[in-house]
Length: 456
Image (cartoon, rainbow, N blue to C red; front, side, top):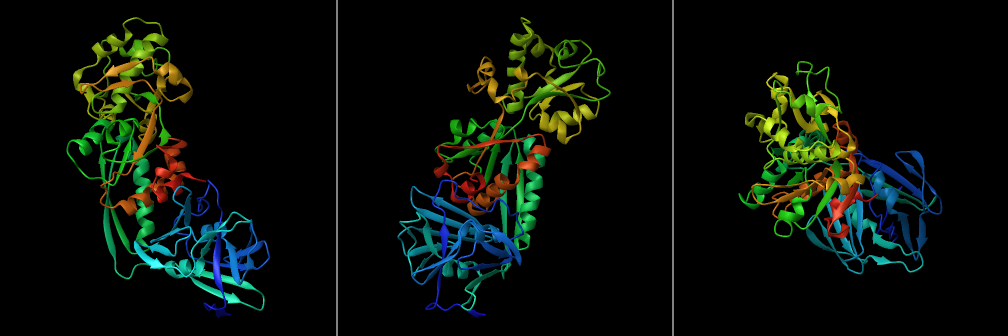
């Protein structure tokens, strides 16, 4: 084998020109090193010396070799995005980000503009975008070899750590109920980049979603990632001044937690729970409605329960029966009170119960705020907070965004990409299953790395 010369061969990737233009979903972090061999005219390639079928065959056209980007990108653990609005192609490999534009001989590699010998263009017959891969391969440190005798292309990519260690801190402010799944994903993410000699420290700030928003809008604090238990707070308070977009990504439901030592633990169920709570010797609590969405959702649920069970004044009776000391700034603070036997029952998200191995009563879908099909029913309840904000009953949906002034925006985008691409099982185990991702205001308003996380 001998290395390809510029005169002999210019490799070009075939980029699928379609809406679903994000790859790498089959490759987890840590799989980026590898060897790919492709043969001209054959629909079988070799990935780390194992045969793999190809969707399209490598071809030679006008002295140029074309190979399928989807396969090569996934083989090296990379991600690719095409934005039809501005005709840009973004590739993310390990620590490298490459941006190209149709018809332009200027590429941006890791933030620096570099010239291209050939401008990316769309082939009329196939509708595919052709991009010079020699430039890309060299930009990410891959080697390309050509064997003219058997018309085989070999691409070798070896993951390489930075020569000089890079350190950075990602500041994440999030709903308290997201603590466990975020910690798991953060650890996996920073362990991966540690192999590349990048030392990432996460500074996590757990807060009620209302308080989290105030940290940004009133206290002017800077964060890299914002994840809230009530997504509507993002468009209501953060857009357009503090961010331009957000994604709805997960759900939850309300439950009533207790322990074996809770009064009437053997008697309470999903039908009589309110009767048990109204007994004079029972202590129960919930989060402060003006700071934690779990708190105002609990009160919205009380209103729905009054209608559902047809019990006039049930809402007010439950409010009157709650001792002020049992209303805490964050719902997760009630867990310690339960475990210390200082509280009989606590209204929590199901995820909090699952993560803390607590027993809990499940409410009917009409009350738990966890069924998107019951949106109209949930909207029958409403509440005005101290600051004048009116909240209506709605399905519980988590939203996230990256503020415009994020100090480490590049790695914040990579972390959100990782969360969306690989976080499904982690969130499910934590009791917060993913929902079909919804991007606002438009999918192409998202940063390219974030878009890679939600497009299949």
